[in-house]
Image (tube, rainbow, N blue to C red; front, side):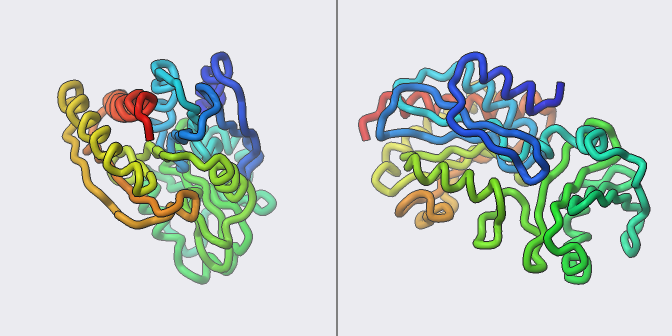
Length: 294
């Protein structure tokens, strides 16, 4: 069973599906709900990017231990194709169309319709490969294409889903007027539910818990983050820190007058340790928030 289907299946047994759609590549994804209908809802997602497997797994861990009295929306990942990995993609489209990519050394590509799959012959980071294809001639040639960039030829290698629009390479965690399809649906869905707090578990450079909230809840949230850090320091071997990233942001227009607060987890070890740390921090915030009056 593919990783996304496995994680979503664990949630389906206990939670109601509130939203379902398909990503650019036809892979289904879902958002689940927990708790009673309340105006103080929170949104918790496990990362837009498919190469952030620890965050998606942490969402399922959180769901199994959550103490919910307020409405919570749970999304294991918004990039199920990337989460399922390169082997999943090759199986879907067939691997017999692999060819060396002109102008990019040691990179393989598959073109199938408007889908472009890229991966190096030898192990290379997704970030490195993404940077190598951001030049304008490449983007103009593949205008309108969906792009999957993988970290290597291993069957289970995670991948990152992107889209080329107006000579720009847009990853799933980029929201702009050019972002097509299901990403716009997801943002509209979140905005319609007006969550008081949006919590994003991620793996960008460092693992981290990013928390977006309105200014009116920031004081209470600050206390929750301090508690989360204390719990992490007591239970995790990974160094942690808290910082305010931006005191004034609307998080792509989803939250009015909001700020961004991040608990960074300097993860450089085993995935299981990262999953534990992300889940511990998220549970601390979510379970404490359930009893706040804001």
